Image 1: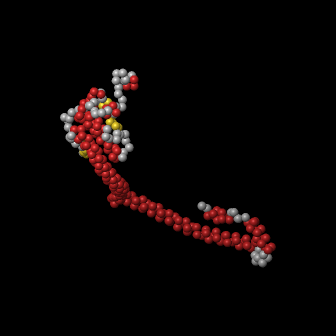
Image 2: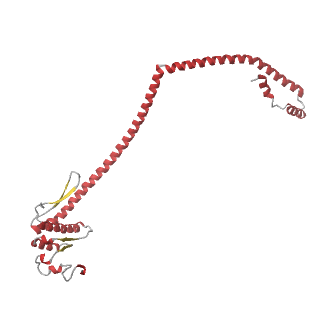
Image 3: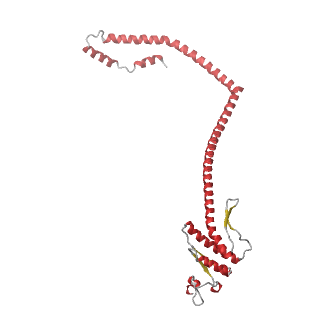
Length: 286
């Protein structure tokens, strides 16, 4: 930059005539001003000239200092580049880069392990909660099994009584639990060689006992059962079955031929007949 132009630029925007007009107006209101405008202007110009000469006397020295400092900066930059090159090629720097890479990998692994720890804590809490629910469910199952055993006991009271009246033998319903926690219901004293008639009458006795159980348990459920194929039941057993059916608060409905029914005393057969069909009076009149 040209130094003289720089100095001139400091005063380039000053309107000399405007300043002179303001000063002369001030003389009208302040008559005690000690200097004329021309004296003041000459003084200011003298200050500017002396300032310019002073700065010009300093500029050469400042330029020498600037050049010297620039040379030193260039030398230092060269040394810096050289030192950086030595540093980049040094085993220590390469080892530092390797250590930084290892540190980054370890930090990633640490983050993964911390997440795993959080996941395990959440899983452990979930397992604890699920275990509580499982224990509660097991207790409910055991309570229900106990209630079931109690109800089967109530059922067996009627079932064993009916079976004894029919066959002179007491039969009981019971359940076992398989390896897969499945309940299997069975009847005692019922083998594979039991005749069909005995099985049919035993099934009917089971249903009658269930009706009695519904009343004792206070359960709102239909209290009638339907059976067919009773022709295979021995007459004495069928007679005992019909007699016991009339004693319960429910209905045993059977479909059979009249001549297959045992001889019943009195008018009990007619009194307990709901519908009787014949060749002249067919079902639905067909």
